[in-house]
Length: 453
Image (cartoon, rainbow, N blue to C red):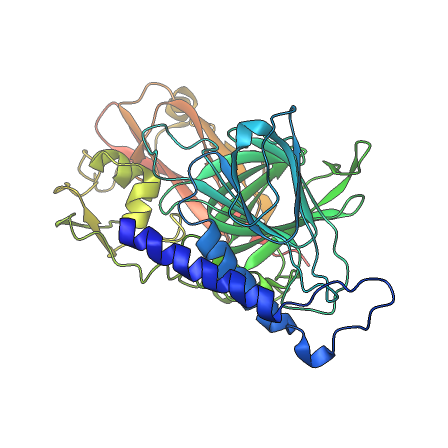
C-alpha cells in the first residue's frame, strides 16, 4: 500500500510538471498571446483532466468531496477555515452547502471536475460502497448534506469550443445496489449509472447509460431502461429548478452521452447504445435492453446451486425463497432488467430451491363456479388503468374471499392486496385462486401498452 501511494505521488508530480511546462497561462495586460501551437488541444485537456482526477481523488472516503480538476467553487456551511482550491483537496460533505464546477475555457485550458462519494440510503453495513457523483463543466449541486438524499442540480448548457468537455452530472450506484434520492423535487431511484442535465426554467433530463432508473413526479412514474431518456419540466422556485410536471415519455438520448467522462467513474462501464423508441417499432426491438457489460460481468461462482425458472416465476419471488435481495440475485446473474426473465432460464442461487409450482394438483374439467359461488369468491380483479404508455406503471388489485390459497403470477399472495406492474409491452397477468374444494380457477387481466411519440 505504501509503495502504491508513493507511485501515485510520483505520477501526480509528473502530471503537475507537465502542466507547468505545456499548460497555457493567462497573459498580463499588453503581453503577447501564447501561440496556438503551444496550447493544449481540447482532447489533450480532457485526457489530462481524467488523469488528474484519477490520481487526485483516488481513495476518497464516504460522504466526502474531492477537488478533481480546475476550476471548482464551494460554499461552506460556516467559517470552517478549510481550503478547497487545488487538485486533491478533500473535505467532508457535512461542511459544504454548495459545489460548482466550471465550463471548458479555451483561453486557460481549464475544465472543472469534482468527485463526491456519498452514502445516500445505502445500509450502514456497506461501509466500503458509496454512490459516486461526478460533476463536470458548468454544473452546480446545492443544499448538500452528509447523505445527499435530497439535492438541487443545475447545469448551464452553453456552447463551447470543446465538444468532448461538456457539462453535466454522472451518478453511479454500487453494483447490485439501488439508491433513492430527491433531485429538484423528483423522486429518483437508480440501479447503476445515469447522466443528468438540469437547466433552470427549462427541463431536467435523465439518460440511463447503464442499468435501470425510476423517476416519479406529480403522481406519475416512469421506468427508464438503459439506452433511453426522460425529461421533467423545471420552472418552480426562485431559481427555476423545481419540478413543475410529470416525467415525459421514454425517448432516445438527446444528451450527448458519448462525450460523458465515464472513464473518471470508479466503476468502468460501457455506455448502452440508444434504444429504438419510435412509433410502430416492435416491442422487442424498442424495449429489450442491450445487455450491459459491467467489468466483464460473470454470474457468481460461489452460488453453486442452479434454479430453472418456471412459468409464473418472478425474480423477486425467487429472491425471497433464496433468502437474498432482488438486486443481489439480479447482479449475481448479470440480469440488467429483473422483469425480463423467461421460463427455462437457469440462475445461480445460494442453495437448491424447489420449483415453484402450485401446491394443489390441476383438476381436470372442473365445473365453472356458479354465479353465486363466484360472488362469494370475488376476485374483483381490476387495474387502476388497463391501458398505459410504455414506461408507465399501474396497480393490479384483487379482493378474494372464501378460498384456500391465491397466487399472482405464481407468487403466493393474500386475498386482499395489490401488485404494481410496469410492462414494456402488452401483457396478460393471472391470478390463480384455489377454491375450498381443492380445485382452482385462473382469472386473467390484460394491460395494454402503447408507445408514445
